[in-house]
Image (tube, rainbow, N blue to C red; front, side, top):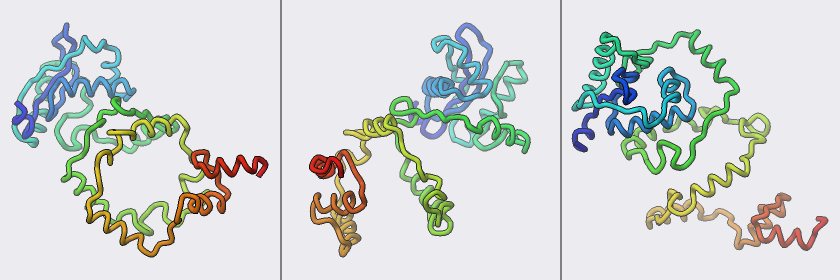
Length: 256
């Protein structure tokens, strides 16, 4: 079963347990049960489509996913989804799919009016952030091949004048005046502790340490924590409540 899923996948259909009217058809390279759980999470996040609107109205235990077909090969999987959606629509099934299916951007053709209407609806809308186990990508990572592809595609695209923020300083920079809330800082801190830290338990290789040493050679560095405090806090009139020397100096100079 796992070998078959690795080179292909399944076509699944979602319905209520008490009814055989299918409301959605999809494809997945994992399992129909896992894909259903992902759909339920997305519905909870508030995504607005006919299918997710219908799904939010149902009790989780009342919804199930049936496997309609096992397919070898990703291209064949996309073709099978198109065929199943077309077949069930001809059969009169009340599907809520917006597109005709397939792996590519086939199905919905957005007009300029549709794009403008979507832009107006989303203007000012606060995004939904899902942290830790609520995030569908929690504890997962992209493959080395995918990361290498992205690296090659993006190489040089944000360097120098190609960077959209190149030459922007102060109020002109989009991040000017932005600061994270204490709640966001706390969440990030909790997520990155222990094994949540991507570098947890890892150690730089001798080659990496040699590269870091070569890059920093000749660069003026603070000789001690006190020196760093003087350079980055005292001289720049910056107070950090996490710096022991800032706290000590403030204690000695309460009015300073």
